[in-house]
Length: 272
Image (cartoon, rainbow, N blue to C red; front, side):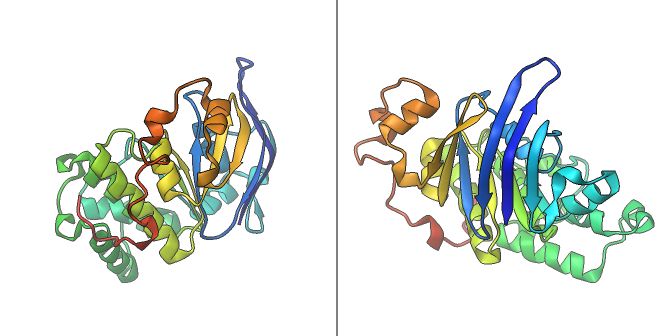
């Protein structure tokens, strides 16, 4: 379980990016983090793995208090946290397989890490993950030869290669077309269900958040202004999060977006 207690972040400029964030995420739960640009969504995610240092508050993953760790302890703790980035963060000149295997680097002794001497189990798991994300035939391709959707699939496989206890996802569909965006969200959700893995997904698309999340947290100006089930995102709640707007176009004729497909019952193997 992940637990945040009064987590705040104030930058040196005096800007308050996050104010007293408090919530828990149990095993297996997928949380959609929504809010306008500048609301503090990316800051919140990056405070959890301390890519951004919180100014105050407590962040606990299982029995480990993350905010109190020194540099060496933090490196070990980050092995337990998988991160999927908006811009993929792949090494372009390396192959797909090499990028996926990089998820194991934190577990290797320094000399093995330097020479990229992975175990047979690491390699077998990487092949299995590439098969699950639909890239079994791309293991030897360079990352710079892939489409955006394929790169994001590599990023998912790399994060899962860590065997994490928590998944943090920062705008995974921002650069993708609608069809590919849905496929990527299916992959993430299905992986979490298979592994009983908690996840926090920073996402701008409210309909995708509603369809593929178990729970929605809404941020505005660094504060949590909504925390509840996806079907509780009424027009009034959306106005609280984003400000005044006509939300009928967002919802469409069906009132809550495309709910004709059960996101929890899809196969990881759907191709991009």
